[in-house]
Image 1 (tube, one colour):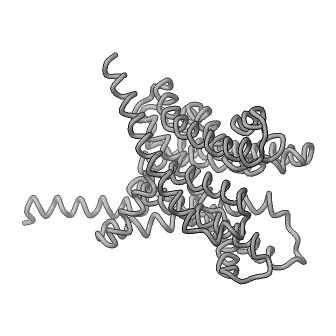
Image 2 (cartoon, one colour; image 1 turned 60 degrees about the horizontal axis):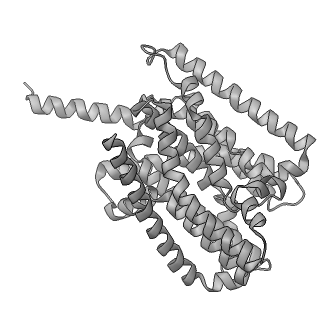
Image 3 (cartoon, one colour; image 1 turned 135 degrees about the horizontal axis):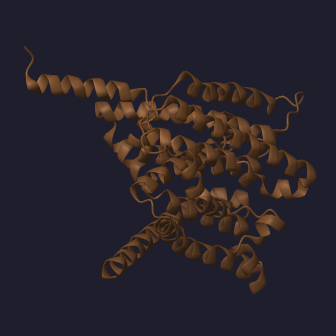
Length: 379
């Protein structure tokens, strides 16, 4: 007869085994995944700069070229999907919409105020010798729509995503008592598919009717369907749903499309529309990458392997916003001051300045949250 402890251990192993093939693993290793996504974004920007600076080859050109073709901007898509998942957990923890918006404002606004003033103050007023009006247009993202200035586009994008998320949560969350209903899951999947398809159709309409506006804003527009998918996936992760064969269809298509478009960019005879179709391919391919990374880190976590690597990734994921803002600001100012080639030759300075800004932002963010938490307790 089995002991009580052995029965418990068997039950735990069975439960763990069933969860291994489930979406819940994205929750278990979410900090590591955020860290991977953020590192991927930094490397992508570096590769972009190398390809721009050394168009004829040399100085890491081949490595950057391979990374751009195989991975590209997938880190951004993974980051957006994970953000949608994280917001779902946040809303389940506290369903107050006012509280939700307050947390988001506290998280983003102080750090953007600091980095926005630093970036646009130095770039517009000191380096460009512009006016306060130039500063304001950049700071409030007016030039994103009028001139395609993309430097901190993600802050504008994620702010808009936060604004609409409570509505998405109401659409994709399961009604009370229907968490196990297959019909309910099917209905949510249909709604998500329709929303994503309609969004792409609207973007195609904008591309055709207002091509210049599309060129300036496509970097954000084509990430809206990605966020919708993350918002939809969040409920499946939260409810620990299994990964079905239908769920695997998108990443399989993504790998095929990514392969096609990687070949397209090396063969000028095909001439696909890269910006639109390419971002769609990267979206689906990023789902495959997300699943692959989640499986790998979930196995490493279960086996308690590579602790230092996993800890570094968790820290990177924890301070992902600070790293994004810090490295973008330093990169933009150095390129403006010295040009891309000179900036790459001073990469050590870029790293030092980025670490300093990230550390300062992390301290300020912690102090801000503590201050608001203390005010809330006092009231």
